[in-house]
Image (cartoon, rainbow, N blue to C red):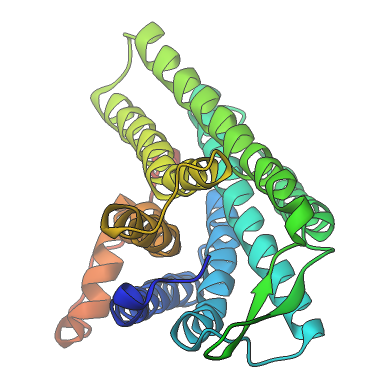
Length: 307
């Protein structure tokens, strides 16, 4: 479906703003990881880096989407269309499965603090996330192609993720692999953390606070993921059932669904890193450089800060 003319300019401007915010947020995450060299000190940061890399790749692909939405044309070749559609599916899968890995690692750290996952385990999770994303995305985009549509007024070219005959099979596969299964994994880990917190009344105030914070973060991850992606699948279902028709209400719903999907790569770095307790003083140092010469006491972090 192409973006309606009525909302074309608003769509491009809105997504352009989202693109700018998302790139800045993800670049700030990269700079925090590089400046403070936390990847070797904190196992969870490797999985957060995985998610940030995937989100950053998604954001880099948005300009092509905006160009197509504004001009109703695909400016590149058919081969480029295949590569573009694959990278889009690949980055989405990597971000989603990194999110699952983060929730699993958090649950492992909290429920078994004396035997947290080793660095080898986290590296293996990192490799599995990207390998699984590659092998899942490749068959889903194998039929991606550039297609032209001629009308009385002009010709339009679109970069389609698959041929029309396979469209809803691909959508159903994406719903299961990119949404339903990840939501089950995230929900399982949230329930696991909630039960652990409920069954562990004898806990220090600091440990209880950190455990509750981690549970809230996993819950917020599930909520934001669902809010950003579920409406799009509902819209696809409505189109499949023949309920969708061009009109102000449906066009606005399409606009909201698309914007929410592009918003998700911007939410992840804010939710997982920029709002993290561990980076609170580092954000302050980033934004208020006038205090960089001030001597700060050295504080050694305990394991619960890694969650």
